[in-house]
Image 1 (cartoon, rainbow, N blue to C red):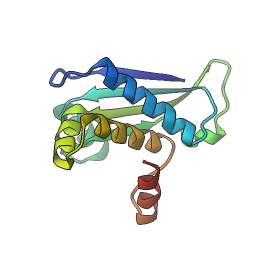
Image 2 (cartoon, rainbow, N blue to C red):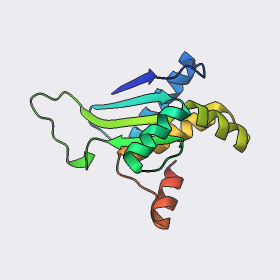
Image 3 (cartoon, rainbow, N blue to C red):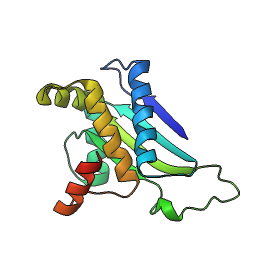
Length: 144
């Protein structure tokens, strides 16, 4: 399994411990979902301006959000490697560190807890989960 993390912002310092936490959450979420194939997940840590632009471009919502997910595979269970593929590239997760700090303060918990939640949320989206309908929301919340 490969978890690629890139810090694309300069407003909030990100420690190696936080990066390690993000990797651990990705690994544990995939294990709980019984993903037993070689996987790659890319995570970009951005600021509110960047995630707002992405949210506007891809979702037509002109506001900052906490996390965006861009799955590359429609159904990971059906993935079979091609000769040129060594692993299944699940997709990209974009997390606003600024929004994570804001939400951690608003909810009265740590940045670590908020980043763990947002990471798990993003991975579940890459695996096909959604929360548009109430039943889907309940299922996803339980897994998070």
